[in-house]
Image (cartoon, rainbow, N blue to C red; front, side, top):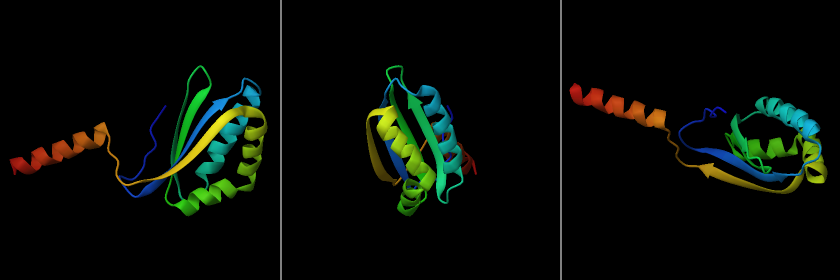
Length: 123
């Protein structure tokens, strides 16, 4: 798994939590790959992170520049087909949450900031 490259602030996240059924796994994987590739082509797309455990519970977080970008992705005709398959065949339950990222940081970013502060102090 790799982390999505996002700005440090002022962007949006669409959090999709789900429990998959045990059916249609091959078809599900194909559709998920197609949707990943299609999402990358959408205006405002910033990246995605996803994980699933052995019991079928998963969380996928997609990152977007704006709420409008998320709405356009939700309304994409090919994505609507995938949504219908998911509701009817692949998910026992799902929840979607949309939030605004006001600030973010990482180990790497913190280390870079510390190095910059040390360099400034040495000057």
